[in-house]
Amino acid sequence: MFKFNLQSYSTMLEHAKDAGYEFISFTKAKELIIDKPNENDGTCTLRHDIDVNINFALKMAALEANLGIYSTYFLMWRSLFYNLTSRNSQNCVEKIISLGHEIALHYDLGYDTLKGYSTLRSIKEINSQAAWMEQLLRLQGKVRLFSSALADFTYQRNRYCSKVEYI
Image (cartoon, rainbow, N blue to C red; front, top):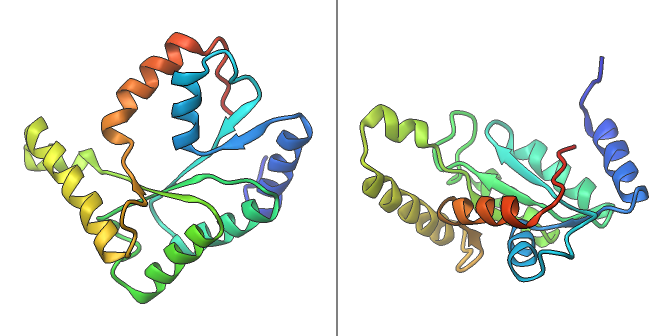
């Protein structure tokens, strides 16, 4: 049975690099897929949905940076396990960014469903949460919003990418 830990994750990333994969951010992936659809072979986009442990996310970010790999960390505004307003969380986010990674909003549509929110209300909540994260974490213009762009991103990926692999 495969055991996931930092060592096995590092080994997996090293194998991917040895196989010639280039790791790119979500922002760069969207640009590449739309602007240069025939030049995307051999690229890998890493995203991390941080649902539980922001401290472990920082360890992963440091490991990736040491390998010259940069990814996108999706943080939750409403998490049962961490609080973005805490000093610890803010320090972790600042360090993740300083290592060269992107920060994005990990929006929980399940909450909206439970509350019976309309699509328009959800869109307003997404924008509000992203703005709040930018203000709280002093990240003006650095919190990426992919929820509204994701449908276009997925469409373009399916339209232009001849081969999409998940590892």
